[in-house]
Length: 224
Image (cartoon, rainbow, N blue to C red; front, side, top):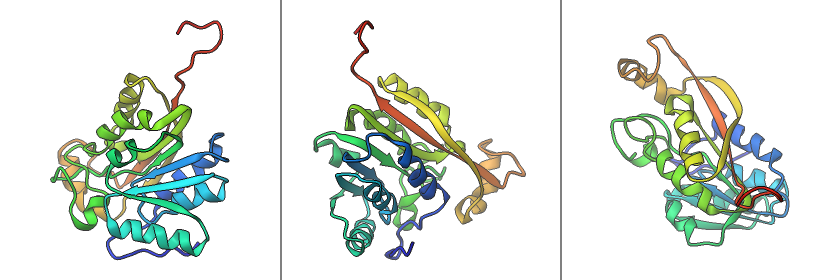
């Protein structure tokens, strides 16, 4: 698939393709309203449209990312609603049947990334965006809606699961893959090892996809 990408926009990588693959197993996708957070080039938005979504909305803090998403959707005849901002921009809209997210999750010295690093830097533990996302995502879903989040095991999937469940959602890991470090993690490996976030000789990371279900209506016979 040829993807247009403005300078500084996150290039689709293993985490992007994992998320795109995982969304195909979501039953509410066909004819549903789909939201992609941290859209980047819009590859996952395109995958959702191809799988039969009735409408797609893409959100990103980067105007260049939104321009890339618009161009890639335009080239394929996909109508997309674009929102500039973070999760709060989506919270003003009606809830979605499916929410997809590939947020920044790389541990960094800065709390918030700058320039190109906005797409991956996520504070000292890699959770400056994930913590807010896990608190927000269930409220973006319709009753029985489904969300998918992809991130590195370096950024503590168990904490994501705990936060999502504490918010009243069901959450579980539905896909796992091990990939070599990219350039950013390779450049930070020594510092990450010194902080105990990876082992001294580690040169690959485990990626996980977490599925979130907002089942707010109890089954017949179960207590409310």
